Amino acid sequence: MKITAIETYVCHARMRNWIFVKVVTDQPGLWGWGEATLEWHTKSVVGAIEDISQLLIGEDPRRIEHLWQMMYRQHFWHGNGIVRGTAISGIDIALWDILGKIHNVPCHELWGGRVRDHVRLYCHLGGGKMEDFYETAPGDAKRFGELALQAVEEGFTAFKSMAVPETMSLEGLQPIKYAEACVRAMREAVGDQIDIMVDCHARPSPRMGMMFAKALEPYGLYFFEEPCWPETMEDIALIQRAVTTPIASGERLVGVHAFRELLEKRAVSVIQPDITHCGGLTEARRIGALAEAYRVSMAPHNPQGPVSTAASLELGFSSPSYIICESVHSDVEWRSDVVSEGFTVQKQGRIVLPNQKPGLGIEINEEEVKKHPFQQEILQRTFYKDGSVGDW
Ligand SMILES: [Mg+2]
Image (cartoon, helix red, strand yellow):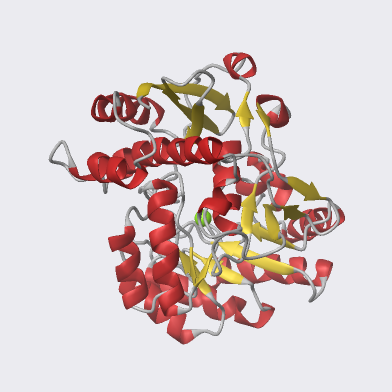
């Protein structure tokens, strides 16, 4: 059995261009789907996949670990940068899809079988609609409360918000009070039974991140995400020690080595590898095993397309430390037209029952994808009041 082609299909989905990866074999009808979406870097990733594919054409797709080692270590430059890491991830996910199809079982059956009956989903406020999640107007705590209620009415028991505004490296009380008002509005709207998460998008400096974490501690967040830059891991650890709120991070890290450092520093209670960036399912499983050793929870980053979601769920059904799956359901109206999925979602509680189909259980409709060709992503550029560059 041989790999004969590695193809990319770019599908413009407003905020992102989804990059679907199709690994084709010499067996009639046998191929696998992966995803390598990296917003604002679409052409780089497509090019990186083309570069890496030279290593894999003619190889046996069943030797996934061997091929992963080739992709990561050959061509001299290791695959631990975000572009190459994403390209490797997309191919690796497709290889697991192929292996599941060969053995006629879902991927989670390949990894020791089901460790849970269902996986809980959480949503973004507004369902992932770009304007609601990222552009809620400052001062509009009421809107946060309304969107929170809407998420619960849609059946979710957990949701994530961007209640921490963009701030310079040091600012006074105003942004802290704003964040607190937004979180208080959400908590008052949905009560104590619902889990609320706040993503800081690594906007704050370490000290601002600490101030936000302290101010929001009384609201019992399920987790508090990326309170400062991932490059300032020691400071994330300081925040983790200073509050009882579980701190989460990891969506921008590539490779098990980066997660080893995060865990060694006891910086987080929740690791968030992105399966489409960190090195695919092969590396995500290693990262998950490491998290087990530290008794740290895993909640993979997953705001992208449908192959990423299917991969996250297969990992979730086979990883004890996995706690919840990030989901986006209202980013584009035609999401369900481009993919058929093997898992089912119960609307009440938004819980997912396991996929019964082989591999990832999905099929991508290439004709539908062609209706949404590449478009340059909307630029997200942030400048502070004084004109200096900020973090979005
Ligand atoms: Mg995030």
